[in-house]
Length: 392
Ligand code: CMC
Image (cartoon, rainbow, N blue to C red; front, side, top):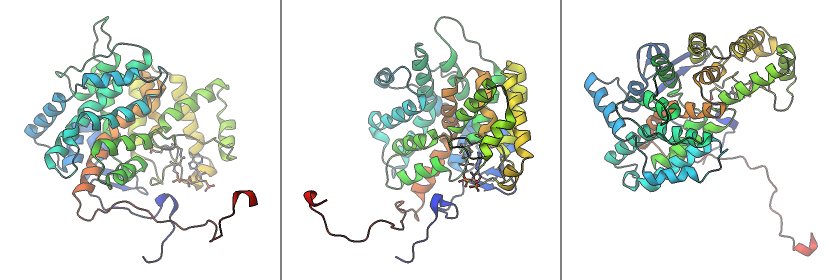
């Protein structure tokens, strides 16, 4: 019980050691297990990157095939879990539906809740990786009033997710391989980001030895906030409102600089990156090609580009080292793919899942781990005697 240091928002305090992801915010570097993000985005797949994050090494062809097969095996949801979706209001946001359903996995899979049983950790890992896309697609189907589409295990994870989301029993569904590839790559870009708010939440909850489903459910709720994963939804809402008001970027930027309550340049700024977010650079290139191909809203893309240009040449943003982050352009791509705005943060959650799992497993396996229990500096009243109610 030495002196307690105050560090609001953990700006300077490391809460753990980790060998999963490396970020150098000044140099704009991001690596998973040592591998640069641009190389993984160009050459790897989301399932392979999930393996890399969770097990620490790139898989051999056989390891990858086995891992992929095991994930496919677990894609079905328990039929009773389907009832769950029916209980929510039709206009429910899919993020709380997602976190609730993941939390409910603890009730359906009581055989895989022990964080110290390696076999159980392994099964819960596979179940989560396999079932989250199904849960996400069902949350979407519920919101549009369409029937749930069962997974088809002849398909890979991302293909299966797109089919469960966009297919209907009424007509044949055709996969667009370019769309599959683009979404898979976006999942790779989101797969881990060291001790961000949701990952720290997963670790903190897990540090009490809560099971993996409970910990990840908490992480999903942390991700929902607009300063974190919710930003991808807020960016699109912001761009649309600028467009509605006549596309006056200069006056919007003025409002941001004047710090009008609730007015921020969403998709800009990052706690760690004080240079360009390397993920944003890749997403920006993808936005061009995907929107070209899918015919997205090019007016909004133009608006985003102009906004970026204005911000990057303005002293307010330069002095504060504010650059576009990963969320700035992703929403435009998701929209062009056909996802409603409310699904954007769900897509972030699907991408971030292997990172949450890898970090939770690293923490559980680390003999140094203690229960997370921050200290405080007390600023309340000093001791005072209780006052009877009629004397107040
Ligand atoms: N627009 C306008 N001003 C900003 C912004 C922004 N987006 N971000 C930071 N600032 C200002 C902030 O007001 C402060 O100014 P001052 O020094 O005059 O008080 C200065 O820049 C430093 O910002 P901060 O709030 O101390 O930085 P932080 O590290 O605590 O917050 C952040 C990081 C990402 C929460 C913040 O930049 C933000 O709110 N950005 C908008 C939301 C967003 O895009 N979030 C997504 C983050 S990336 C991926 C993810 O996690 O989802």
